[in-house]
Length: 221
Image 1 (tube, rainbow, N blue to C red):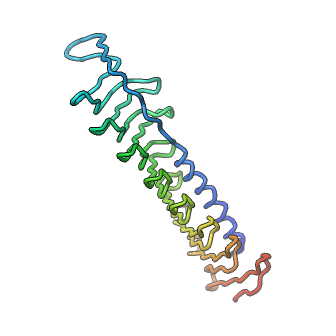
Image 2: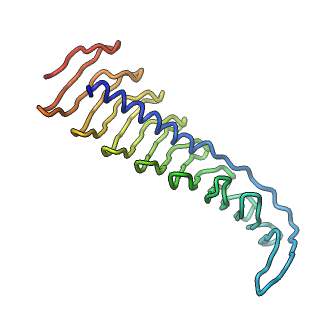
Image 3: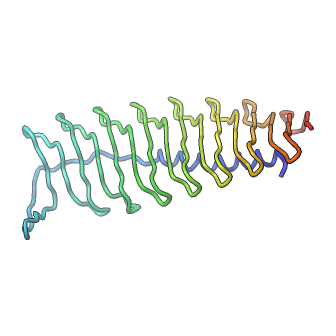
């Protein structure tokens, strides 16, 4: 496989991983209202059975525990009754932990999916700034800027690892990936088109320069 084809394959792989990672930012939760009634239904062998359980202090709800169609839910509230944490069963069947700041803005999500665990970190404006997910080949780490644009991807794949760096417009600027023969380095212009590449070959290193149109400008050896 030529260096240009390898870089194109890397672009496809990183684009797919990036889409999957961004998907972890789609999950958004809504604050849940807290009716004050506690309805006991049965007591058996020191087990209290109820449709809902609430903990109050000074007349304010600070925690509640109840069941919904997906399973159980535990909500935690601060002294001002602002929702700051939620632990519950998701519709996918796994666990979901939501952390919020004092303004009830979501700042972290930790949940289980088909490939394992996922962690999303958000800033005070609820824009995602980082994400870690488990994939079929290992872990993927993505870093976003303050405008929620992906600027760094670090991923595991069958041949080893890969790093992709993008500009503020999410156009790839550089990529380093391991291949069967060693490392491959690609450099891209502001439009995300490859302009230089370096890779190992059985006889030594191979270096390419391309024109903006994709034509080989220089090759060595």
